[in-house]
Length: 145
Figure 1 (cartoon, rainbow, N blue to C red):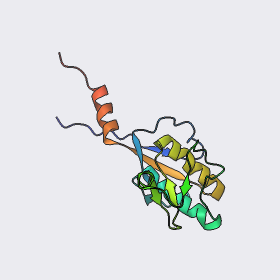
Figure 2: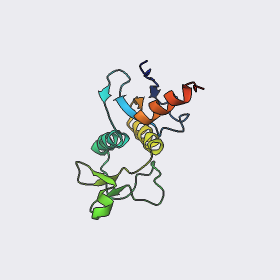
Figure 3: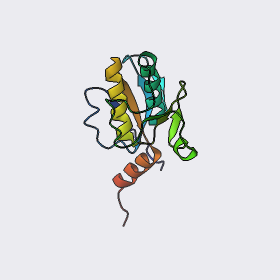
Figure 4: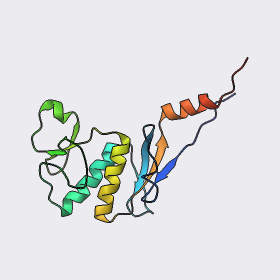
């Protein structure tokens, strides 16, 4: 008997993104800035970088933090990080290094905060990770005895 594939896709938008607390086992599959046209996406940090790049077009970002994104005691944007810091960051087109080492829940919230500032109708279609689908399938399986 073949294993059944679990399709457990979610779509996040402004109406429901705060209700999804645990996104550990989901990754972006596609995203849309207008609610109609979708583009492929693989990782949360790539979507975050894309939105920061869009925000930077109209708002010259400099080293430091962005007031509407709470990163705690960490610095979101650096001009010249050391080698260890570079591993936790992605380099933007402007030359700044963006801290992307956050959980999926944080990156989701940050993305919707930026989209709100840009007045973008952000929608993110999420796919379950392989771990999520395997775990779900095992949980629903009957024990043989």
